[in-house]
Picture 1 (cartoon, rainbow, N blue to C red):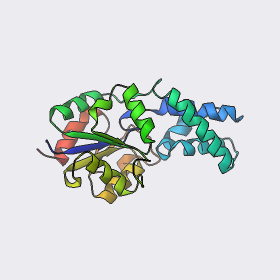
Picture 2 (picture 1 turned 120 degrees about the horizontal axis):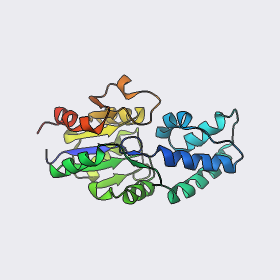
Picture 3 (picture 1 turned 120 degrees about the vertical axis):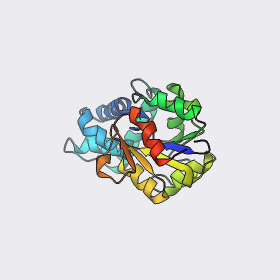
Picture 4 (picture 1 turned 30 degrees about the vertical axis):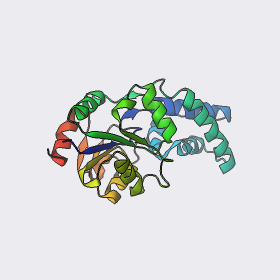
Length: 223
């Protein structure tokens, strides 16, 4: 399986980042005079980014905020989150074993996330996982970001791979739309953050735990 590339989304796919993202969101909501919002409300919104989380938290309380107010809260969130990025965030169960095996097989591993590149790299460094990945690309790495296919294709090229020998792994409709637009097969994970369950999407494979990952990958990318 050498010369093959596996490109992972980050939040909700590689790492359960919800606790720290929700903590940061509630921190800025409190600063603005709003109440904290629980995980049930926030988790489905995470794949749309921190601005969407702030907006959802405000609207859940029957309020609205101006774009300028959201901008100011977002800046505070990034500052707080950068200092608290790996307090409770952790790899999903079984992930590290998968990364070890992909590395053993000589496969190239990359990240394509709509998180800012600097934040993505900081998180993976803090968790001790950065060395597994040939490249870590974020929403600001290229002129476009997911669901534009060039974000995924750019990550594949940066990793030295080719689209016809690549697979994407993701948890959301954004990941699904990106992979389809790039004509790259996708393995959907059910344990992430999404408004539409991945089992309702036309993924080439769906897994409920990383113990199921390698058999799914082998079906899509035979040696």
